[in-house]
Length: 506
Picture 1 (cartoon, one colour):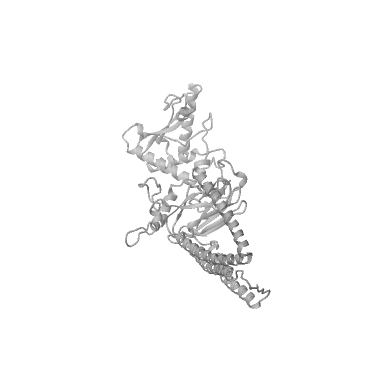
Picture 2 (picture 1 turned 90 degrees about the vertical axis):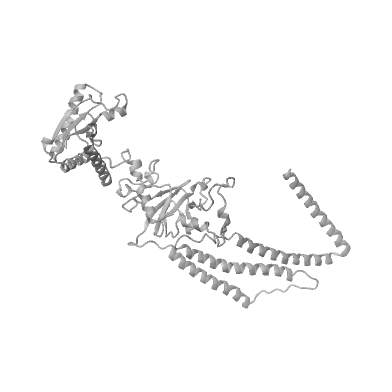
């Protein structure tokens, strides 16, 4: 019904316009074309002045009304050190272009009114006027000079790279359709090498795992940065052109396939501080920015207020495809203490996804972090066993001791845990242990018993070779007689194939 009424109104309006035209034609015939034209000219001139006033008022009022949301004044001042320079340049440019805009609009409509067609008036042509040309050339040139020089100064400040000895956090952001893949360096503070030819489903950035700098790099789901610390973002793209855009920090840089770019900035306001700014109150207790005190869900007045739910965001400012909107990522600016705590919770992408898979080039090597972690875990288990009164707790599995298939030859990685056991034996000189070998029930029972005895003896020989007295050691093979899980599943049989030691005396 509403659409039908709208169509009828349009048709009626068209009929009225046609009828007015016919009335004008009849009036022209009665009063004469010339008089009608003069009346029309005066009317159009007056309309031009009226339109000019309404147009300028609407432009100024709407700009003031939307200054916080469209022009980012009010609470949206820059949240980075360099952002003030860019905002200043924007304000200066807006000031001069605003003056030009108002003057040109006034002159445009004023001339339309002043030089409207009238009887006896003849147009005057000015084909050349040196003075006017100097004025309208010199003034823009001077203004543009100041703007350009100021812009270059701001550009040089904003686009300066970090110095070789300057402390900065380096982060990498890789754009692809349709997301950002973030990469942080681990404790070494260095990002590892990449090769696009190595990109796979499990290696989305093409990291070269033979480069040890990649070992501790991690891929978080959000961009987290400490306040007051300089950040250098390495920006790349995997497929098409993207744009790394942090509007609140005045950061915007293209992500170009095959051509890494960068941006350096220092966050100055934490996420929580920005929320407090949006939720600020006036002296009388009313909201300073009412729009941010509205509920997030208009249908649920009890839902959090918009300022409480605010987050910085990373967006793509390039129309990179139909899923362009999905490239939004959350950004959190936190205190240095919160940042360090967050870093401590992150796990290396290599360790969580690549380690001990077919893509791992370091299968036969333990890294320092793994050695320390395993040693700490092993020592903790031994300490608990020594303090326990239960005989069952005195039996500890050597979880990281393994053998070549079907033989008693130790694998290269077994030595790390055996070295931990040597350290424990040295730390507790009165400790006496029994080394027990166990197998699953696959194959001949007698052969399994023999294999378990050989494996236990191999561990005995390793410990003795490291200086542990033979009187403190014994080796026993139990074969398949003491399973700790079912032998009906591969997982159960794997648990049954084990080497353990029992604390006999301490």
